[in-house]
Each structure stands twice: as C-alpha cells, then as structure tokens.
Image 1 (cartoon, rainbow, N blue to C red):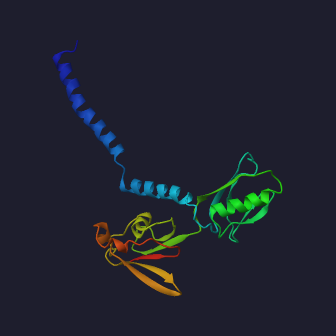
Image 2: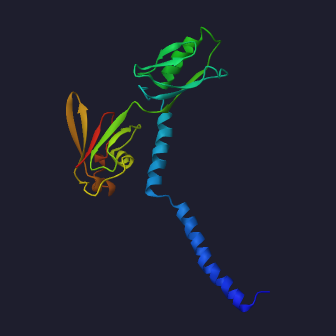
Image 3: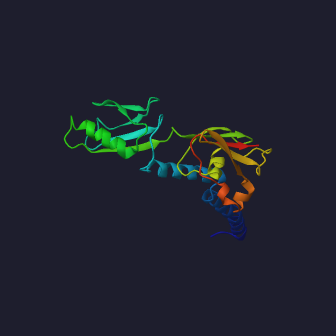
Length: 211
C-alpha cells in the first residue's frame, strides 16, 4: 500500500509526465510545412510516372519490365542522344515517345527472340523537364518539372522566399513563338484565394523570378 506522501508524489509525476508525452505524440501527428511540401512532391511524382501521355526525354529513368524475363527487365537511363540500351536490342530510341509507344517498340523488337513478349514501361524518375527559380527564393536553381505543377507548388519546391522577397511582384518568364512572355504572379493574392488564374501550370523551361 502507498502512503499518503507516496501517493502525492505519484500524482504529481503523472501531471508532468503524461501531458509531456501527449504533447510529443501530438507533435508527431502534425507534420511541419516542410514535411507537407515533401509529401506533396512525392505524391506528385507517383502520379507523374503513371501518366500514359507523358513524353519521355533525355535523362529520364525508365523501368523496363518484360514478363517472365527478369534478365531482360531493368532500370535504364535515357541517354543525351535520346536512346536506351537493352539486352538483345542494343540501342532503342526512347525520347519523344510515350511509355506505351516505347513498350510497343520494344515488344516488336523482342518478337525476333521471344514468343509473345509482354513489355511494360514506367517512367521511374523525371529528369528531362526542368524549370528555374531566380532571385530572392529560398533555394534558387533548376528543378524537375512535374506534370500539372503550378507556380505555387514550384515556389514551395524552391524553399519559399528570403526576407527581402517582394512577394507581390513575382513573375514567370516563358518562351512562346520565339518571344519571351511575362506572366505576373502575386503570391499574397493567390494564397488568399484571389486571382487564382495567376497560378498557371508551368511548362518546361519556364523561369520564376522573385524580385
């Protein structure tokens, strides 16, 4: 049996320990902004690699799978010349094709060596399409462009802003028909749900300038 003094000590200990543990668990349940941004990018990558209309480009990583032929299945990079190297087929043109078109081309080539080959092509990592962030961004530089990526998402990928960033004066530079076009982007307005049409979907080669 506990004495009265011992019971008081145990009760006080529970008052301090349990809330601390609860706060720790609560902190674990609530991800930080950085974790949220990372989760968003990871999800976007998974969706991007499943896009059947994605056009393969140089430096992309491809997952080539031939059913029941593990020695022919492998992860391969698309070379700068747009080709990949595969067993039996040697060099195969990949850039400029969708995953389905490339799978059909590989299947046709393997018919000389295999009976009814079944080929699946997945874009494991997108490296061929990039956008750029300049100026007072958290981490200026070149970034991989994911399908349907907006300016707001791109800024998140770039680490946000420095203390000196003019968030209402941001703009996107894009080459269209041989001319440079400027698209304004007011971060504060878009974040508040205003003028959402400024949050355009980026294209390969776009440059986000943060004054």
